[in-house]
Image 1 (tube, helix red, strand yellow):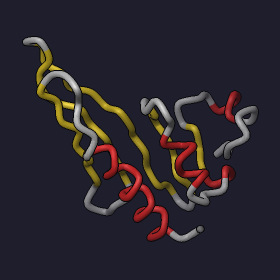
Image 2: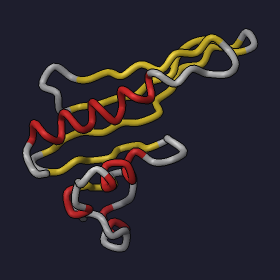
Image 3: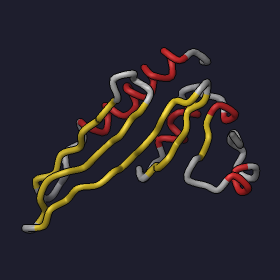
Image 4: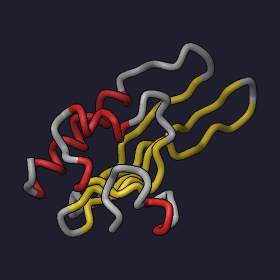
Length: 111
């Protein structure tokens, strides 16, 4: 798996699954936001729980050049691991939430 279109389709497929999972409490929905060029992906929670506003990012990923950059992965089971299980080589995934000097120790792409 190494084409831009394959990465775009895979990210959409994996992330759309999370929009179908209902919350057991509160009036909260999960929304997938994809940029017009289909290279930027956000998974967001929004709604209300016990009178308090809920609004936050669950996942933020971006396709830059030929790599998938994970800027934030707040999913318990890890979207990153789902991408690897789906066939994305670790050297095509950058864990952008780590500083560059730490990335070389993660087993994923450095840049």
